[in-house]
Structures are given as structure tokens and as C-alpha cells.
Image (cartoon, rainbow, N blue to C red; front, side, top):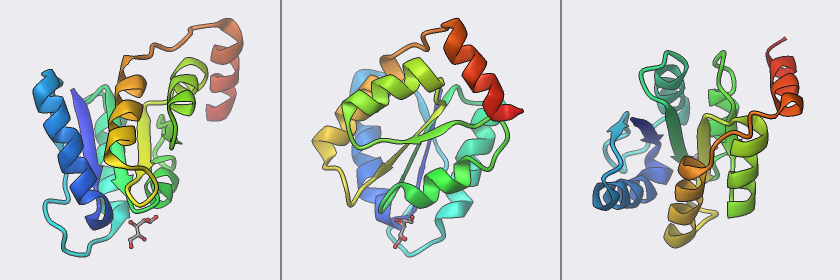
Length: 142
Ligand code: RB5
């Protein structure tokens, strides 16, 4: 189960991603926002980050205008490694190297087609499980 959330700036892109997941049979839980009315991104970043940190959802996707506010907020939650990605290389590398558990994207930065590719890469790439990456990740939490 994927936790997904956005603010008003990311609402349209979130809807496009959810339509893609519906077509692909990927299950997700939408934590809001539910309209384009102006709202505060930390509310939704915290909801998604807590769902991932608690184990309710395996991974999360957060979208705002830039993706920056979402990533700053999500990374405050213990156990969250949120990665702001605007390209497929970063999405793949952050899964392999950082075991990132939340993908953040900026709806004013990436187009719909690229965002869908980034999300697919993020969700399909496993963590490398290599000793050096495990060691480095453990140092993040120290
Ligand atoms: C909203 O205007 C915008 O500030 C928000 O979507 C996001 O980009 C914040 O980081």
C-alpha cells in the first residue's frame, strides 16, 4: 500500500498519478488534500510520513509545487527518508543507496509523464542491501 498526499499545488499531479496507479493495479491510500483550495503542505506531509513510519503503508509519495516543503517536513518524522526527485536516475539511486521510503516531487517542476516514470522507477527499485549503504543509513538515525 502506497500513501499519497499533496497540497493544492500538487493536487492535479496527484490525481494523474492515482489514475495511473488505478490502471496498473497499484493500491494506494490518499491522505489529501482533496481539492485545489489553498492549504498547508505540512499537514499532508505529516499524515503520509506518519503512515509510512508506523508501517501502515510501505512507501509514500508527496507532491507540492516544488516538492521542497514536503521533503523538509517529511524528513522531520523519525524513520523517514524522503527524497526529492526530478529525474529517474535519482529515483533509482535513492532507492538503491538510501532506501528512501518517501518520494517527493514538485508539480511545478516535473510534467505528468516524467512524474509517472519517476514514481514507477521509485516503486519498482529495491534497496541494494549492501553493507556500505546499510552502514551509512544507520548513521543518519544516530
Ligand atoms: C504553495 O504555493 C507552495 O509553496 C507549495 O506547494 C510548495 O511548493 C512548498 O514547498
